[in-house]
Amino acid sequence: MVIYLCRRCRQIIGRYEGNWDEPILGLSKLRPEWQKELMEGTNTDWVQVNILCDDCLPIPFDEGLWYN
Ligand SMILES: [Zn+2]
Picture 1 (cartoon, rainbow, N blue to C red):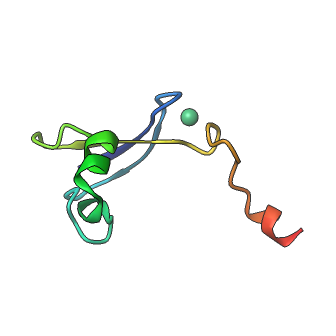
Picture 2 (cartoon, rainbow, N blue to C red):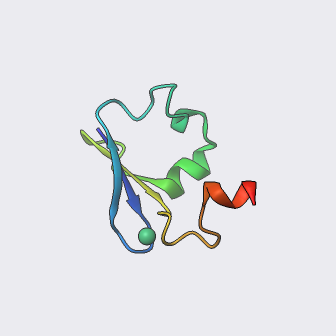
C-alpha cells in the first residue's frame, strides 16, 4: 500500500492499494535520490510518499485559473 502524506501539514492526501513500484504510479522511474527523498518505509508492507497537498503548494492548483 502507498500512502501519500503532505510533507508540511502531515495530512493524508490519498492512498493506493497496490505496490509502490507499479508502473502506473511512476515512482519506480524516479531517480534513486528522489525516491530516497520522497519515500519512507520501502522495505515494509506500505510506503509513505511525502508530497505537498493543495493547501501547502506555493501556488495552489486551481483549474479555473487556467481559463481566466
Ligand atoms: Zn499540506
